[in-house]
Length: 115
Length: 113
Image 1 (cartoon, each protein chain N blue to C red):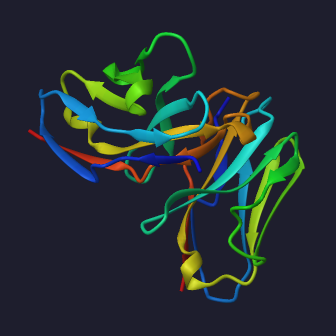
Image 2: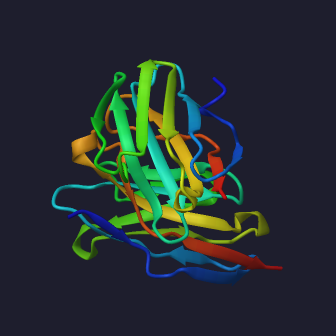
């Protein structure tokens, strides 16, 4: 069965430091992969997505993610974190049965940013 | 477009009452999804529609839950009767054709007391 694992429940970084959020997936075919961000009391906003092609994907707000098929990973990175990046981040895989739009989410990683 | 619009934003109801959550998808999108978010279970898909037709309702927890999409611009999720364990944030999302991103509404926070 398809699944997404985000090993880190909470991460705290200092403002200006680099960030990497981990995501591992289990999926039988070529996955459609997404990273969403959720600010408190808000809906989910798409940061970036991977469907095919270049394995390094650029997103909004300075985020990027790298698809590594050999490691079944799709880690999210940012070179320098801003205080406004504090939020919860969700990795998701699109299920083929739903036209890849049926999303299976990881449990999320809550990011705190220290000044 | 104003994005996916959900109403109400907050709902507090007593156990046993009927609750109806509403969603207006982005115009032109032909997929509509209902998700539920809880601390214990995270984000889970309840049901999704394609061209107003329910395709997969395997995530609907029990018969107390029902969803409809009478036209391309409106969907409802109904809980009757409601129970305290239904307390959660319910999200609606829509997308255009397969393989494209889903846009989420701001959610309805439901509290059943």
